[in-house]
Length: 198
Ligand SMILES: [Zn+2]
Image 1 (cartoon, rainbow, N blue to C red):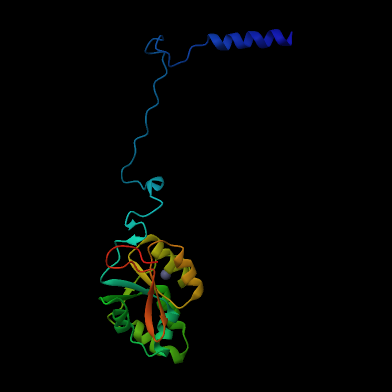
Image 2: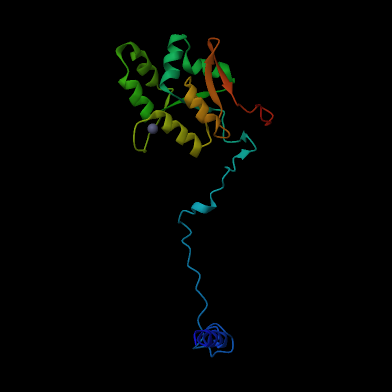
């Protein structure tokens, strides 16, 4: 009995017409699904390219001059110890105008420093420095810098922090400025011909 029932059921199914079948009268037919109207202003997350268009392989076309250089706290402190003037040393390194940039959380870090680093604060408040406001949660400067260069490929990161350097190296198109031999050096900087130098 069970088998017979099953067969009958199958046959019934087969005889059913699709509700979209052309042989049905217009009014009985299932209307084709309306496409959802897309809001052109809505953020299209899926369409964000995995690789930013400003990068031609590794060559970053958004980089200056003038170069915008995100500095972290220790880069300023090490520069003071090495008696390097930040803006001048940056220009000596890149042979172009450089604008050091300080984010709110780096500034907060510098403000928390002990008295002996007060000179760092004075440097950070130099009018030649550009202040970048932070809108993120938390005050961890490393995360802030990594996040910024991931979103905006127009910066060089100046740091002496090994961990931060390692994190920046994973992001394509972001050169790193560091201190060695009493001067600033640059890593991963594309050369003037547009060919990557790595
Ligand atoms: Zn921040």
